[in-house]
Image (cartoon, rainbow, N blue to C red; front, side, top):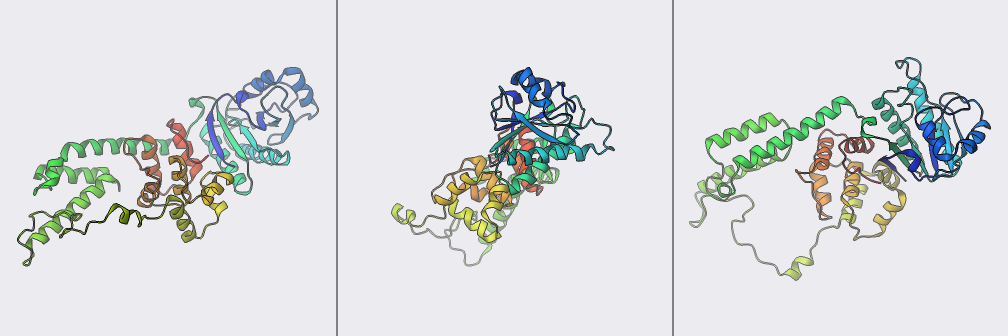
Length: 382
């Protein structure tokens, strides 16, 4: 199965196992520990916890879930943050890995984690998140389980400050670029002899291209516009150009009328479906099915459904997850999406984030999902 990040109180989450950041001694602590005891039933849970006894940091043990919506409570002891020089990071990693291993031994199909040790123990949230993602993704490479990372509130969830700033800048730059482009670009000019626009507009376009510094829509538009203008000029200078040749002939306009095809004829020559194109790409890259669906954060059953149905139509988040798993370029991603009748939109925050990640060669779907979650956008895959 796969990893999902959700915003909720962990006591309301339904899963086979709920992870509790436990007090090392038999007794009720603060934060998540207190909430779980209150929801599960103080007396019964304390009685079960007493049978485990004192626990060491990083250790994991289980009790019945009592009144929670689960089968088991997995208790694990996180470290108190002392600056990072006392093995705190390694201890948090063991909390996740030991809890996941125990859940697998218990036959659990799903498990819900809080961000361990980030409450009263003071572990830095961004580091705790990176550790959680690393341990969970490592586990899911070899195991099938639905893993829920439960975040109580938005303030409890952070991504790298630099990454967050870079994405905010990318989205802001893109919006400014599109606004300026639409102000300087007139559809009337685009269809007439002066498509290149006035010298002021050309200058503005060049400045925008320099200031954006990105391989985005604007760069491709200006490059295409320049190429079409040059082609049109060469066309009109040809000595043998026919007398009826227009002064401006865009590259997409055929020099001579194309033979019209009937609708039936067109329908006989359809291109590959989304499913056919997807598995062609997988074969070309020499990947196995498990490698793809795990990297896409998609469970095995869902992927089997895709493989067995040539006319499968994905949701956008599934199509994008598969594009990330295959490490497609931006143009390849657009091609894959188009085969399902989908597209990347310049007006959607989620799509701009994904464009940023692809352009910066960030194909870690768990990190991408963290970013999307931070911006209150739907995550990819599961």
